[in-house]
Length: 298
Image 1 (cartoon, rainbow, N blue to C red):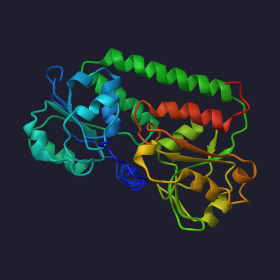
Image 2 (image 1 turned 180 degrees about the horizontal axis):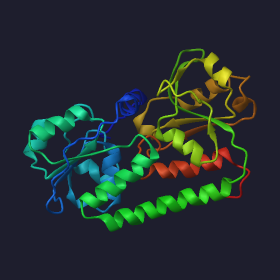
Image 3 (image 1 turned 45 degrees about the vertical axis):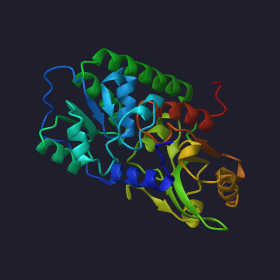
């Protein structure tokens, strides 16, 4: 598999995305006609382009893009943080879509007179706005409207199903180090990311209520103090991480005094869409709602 996304790399990209200042380029993309040669500089953007029916216009992606499967046959332009500018120029794109948090890359491409479209993906609102913006700038607004309609229908359905229910405290973890005895450092969703949004929409409440830090890192003692009622441990697909999930689950069950462990409400989600804030992240919303509220007749 060309793309290998071990958990530490996911955390690196995630931290850059949520800690970085929300940069918006002052230079608007100058697009006089429908782009015919598009380069994507993030997996979430690649997924969005294909979801909008623009797959035949995508001429290159990053080393970490592997969905949908046909992107594996496309040329790559390097990594998320350090794309190869010479390769990008040689491919003669008429539009490069990238994350606004990639400020250095945006500025460098604009200096090279390459049309850029910076978008955001930190929150679920960002994800939806990115769909709308890409649709508008590529003359695929109808496709964007249809996709957003489906997303909003899913959100409304789950909101109706969970209306009036108690909201259990939920902790989503995105990675942790494990020694021979126990977990050590656990990264969890804070108040400033799409996982926090998903918890709320799924009918729960984030157990971590502090505004800082943006990507909390907890010890075992910190988790025991928060005492979440539900723990959801998120992983990319099996080929993209090297964790032993049986061992991970055993380590969770060592935390005997946490409500989620006492009530057997620790869940591991291992899906390729679970770590990519693109259109398919709303699949995760459905999964979370069912785990947080198993009492509902879904």
